[in-house]
Length: 164
Image (cartoon, rainbow, N blue to C red; front, top):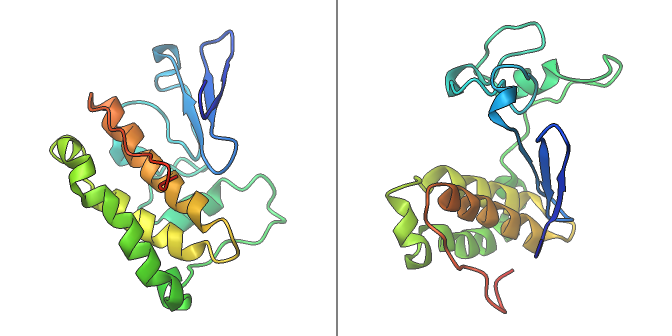
């Protein structure tokens, strides 16, 4: 479908992949409260989405992620420095490009979906993509905001011949 490969399983699990950096999982209501892991438990309560494999609710993303390792032989992930501090040459580029999220282009969505966390993620992810693929990281985070807008009933046409 357009930019995405969509796989729909017989149990109504849907995978949507952009063939690059983003994979979305959509579940039918039959899965409500019956799943667990890095995507949460699908019970409608965002406050318990960081439930570890030991069934403890935590607030730290790194602790949460480390709890779901498949193999205990894998090392734990440790906190990382801010990518924009590490790669300061990327910061200006990231700030300039990620501004689209807060711009007039998405203005109809701003009252439905707060742009700040998406903007912050865009800057962080775009700074972190320092070995090529920086446009993919940027485009993926903007596409995530556009998808959230769409889910809230606001369709934004943001891609242009020069943007993603």
